[in-house]
Image 1 (cartoon, rainbow, N blue to C red):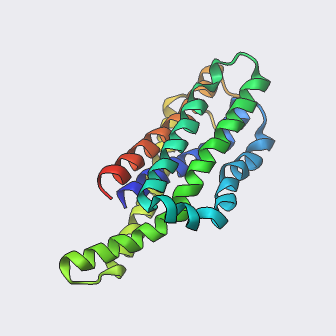
Image 2: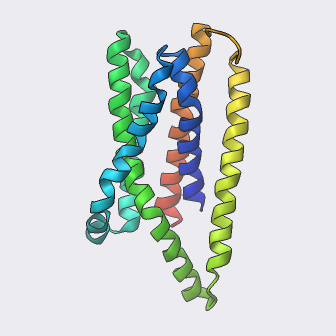
Amino acid sequence: TLAAMGMFLGMNAATTANTIMFATYFNKASMSGLIQMIGFLPMFIFMPFITKIVNKYGKKEASVFGTIVSLIGGAVMLVFPTINNPDIALVVYLLALVIYGVGMGVYTCVSWAMMGDAIDYNEWKTGKREEGTVYAAYSLARKLVQAIVGSIGGFALAAIGYQSGAATQTPEVAEGIRTIVTLVPLIGYAFGAICLKFIY
């Protein structure tokens, strides 16, 4: 559940602010829908192969590897503005988003099976089967993260000076939005990777 909270923090933060970032940083608001599809497309590509990957490497190992790949993609997204050419910066961002999506695709495909393992482990340790309690706690954690991300996003945008009704934003606000969109998911995935590696 803790690992999933980190992952959902990352996914929801990126999804929530991507539309605003493409409107303010790249001045291409119409691309935001395509961007979200690029982020999730690798998950569908991985679905047919996930059983073979898990059988060969294990659920935990595949998930940790996936989160590390996502961290690499997130790190590239964080530093892409150092490229002076905006068109090249956009291409680098899109490629990093694909890398990020590949990593998340592995984790997303395996995460529900990991919940089943946690339930089985709990039954083995305690003699009680409490799947209802475990799934309820997991669902509650997801909803809490969604609420927290929405709140943090609003506060963060206000803190950097974002004006929701303005036709354009200042370069400082655009840069702040870019940092939020790339840094918050990076923190969430790092937390998720640590939880998978050392707690699960």
